[in-house]
Image (cartoon, rainbow, N blue to C red; front, side, top):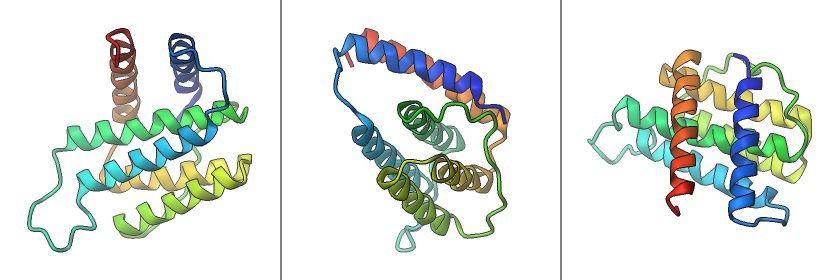
Length: 161
């Protein structure tokens, strides 16, 4: 999946937010923590780890929206470290349970935050993509959901979010 359109959209949103909120300091670690929080929110919606509960996962639309919330921060982190030249979403088959995919993704994000580099950034994308594949999302669904959520984020900013 091509990422350049998403990077361009995210750059615009980041610039808008930074201007509107008068952000002038380095927010790399804030965005990193936000990504980890969004990843946890996604895990919570899938309920993949809640062995003690009979309640099933949220509906697919809710899970997809949570999925793209993380993509906003993943793109933004790449922009912060000038890694936004990544043309395509790196893909690698990862045959693990959804719970394991979440744990590996969390670890890869943490590693990238400690040592921001292109190979570690690509590794985060691979793990995160494996979650999307496991959840049954197509690239078209992900891109459209990102576009929809990007506009919603602009609306939130305009309304004083």
